[in-house]
Structure formats: C-alpha cells, structure tokens
Image (tube, rainbow, N blue to C red; front, side):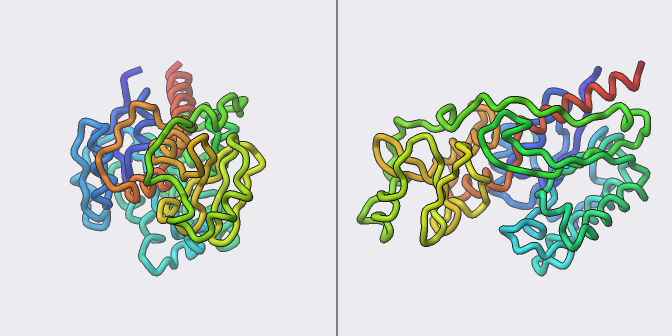
Length: 319
C-alpha cells in the first residue's frame, strides 16, 4: 500500500502525525501555538501554518487522504470546566471550522481524538452534534474510549475518545479498533533515576510544604501528585493523566522519589509517558512550554495501533 497523505489540524507537537507515520506522510499541518509549532518542525520536514484555523481557507489545504485533528479539549475536559460548545474562549466551536474544511476537501478518512468527557458532555448532546455533522458530511463513523495503559503499553492512566470516520462504508465495515494488550512497561522504564537537574527538585528552601512531601512520598516506583495542599499517591503504579498545567508548580504536579531527592518529572519523561520515541526532538524552549506541549499531546503508541488497524481495513477492502 502506498503511504497516505495527511493534513493535520490542531497539530500540537505532532503526536497524531507520529502515530500515523508508519502509514501516512503529513504534508500540511496547522497549529496556532507558535511554541508547539517549533517542536513540530524539529521533528517533521514541513513548515507549520501557524494561522488561526478560522483564517485558513479550505482551498489553501492540499488534497489529502486523511484529515487528523485533536481539536482543543479544554472546552470539554474536567480540567477545563466542561463548557463545551459554549466555551467563552471560543475553543468549543473549532470543531465546526474543521468540519468546514472536511466538507470541501472530502478526505477518505477523518481521525479525531479528544477527552473522554466529550462523550457525556451536556448529556451526550455535544458528541451527538459531532457525530451528526460527520454523518451529514457523508462519513461512516466508529469511535471508542481507550486507555493508554490498556491499549498502548504505556504506563499512564489516560482515557481518550478516538473517532475514525470513513467515506467508504466498505472500509468502515472492515475497520475495528485494536484489542487491549498487556501492560509490560512500568514507571521504572520511563524515569531516569540518575537525573541531577537542580531546577526539578523540591527542597525545604524552595517549597513551603516540603515537610508534607517528605512524609508522604516514600516509594520510588510510584508517581505522586501534589494537589495544592496534599499529596496523592497513585495506587495503580502508573503515571496519572498528564495535564497541560502540570509544569506550573501549583496543581496536579507529578512527583517522584529518586535517590537524589523528590522532584517533578522532566519534560522528556512526560513525553515518554505519552508514548513518544526517545529520539523525538525537544527544542530549547522553557520547560513550562514543554510541559504544556506534553500534557496537551496524545499517546503516540495508541494512535499507532489505530493507524495499523486503518491500514488493515484499507487492504482488506481492496481485496
């Protein structure tokens, strides 16, 4: 099978593109955040269109086989207070901008990723609107909520909704989501226990609540979270869901105990917990940007397994 051509919207650092890389070359990417675009361009041989999607005319997008997008989830996520299509920052309506481009470009496949809460948001009305829109555009749709630790062999508890839509009913009927696989990777496969970067470590001098951390953070094979005033231990022995604000030092900061002390995860470790390969390039940006990029991204290995299922369906439909 020849490689597909893809257009990526809300591309972030290219997590979806990385997942689809075995079967698809991204030839166009749109990402409004210029810092995320820098990371994308460090890893892919194309220039990112950094305009707001509202300013992108469908005719400016090249013809492609697949349109991919993890449209902004803040409007639908627990962390973003679930405003959905009514999101006052204007993020909820961005799905319709994507639909506008899909309507003109008519790709064979549409792939979307979002937070699990999208399914139940506004008693299911939000997701129904999204599904109906895709149906009206002539697509046959399958979707499923998958957890990274059950479907990507990635030690992070991260549930996301994945939507795969096909213009061909025959290909749609052949497509199935991947089966769950055993989690063989653990936190210890990701954490660099020798890392000695002072800015990552918590000390009595730097942190008012250090005594609390020292009392509660006792194991080295668990990722803890600092929740503003208390420490939460994650019993499942996997990393809790990484968030975009985890590097800001306030809420939901993932913490680990190493021989050198108590520290937060490094940006590289966050990307590894998202299933990015070790050779994924992280440019010289402030850590706050890299944490945000990792938290906003997708679990590459889950998407790669879905991409392989898409490839299988395409091949079976040809026969």
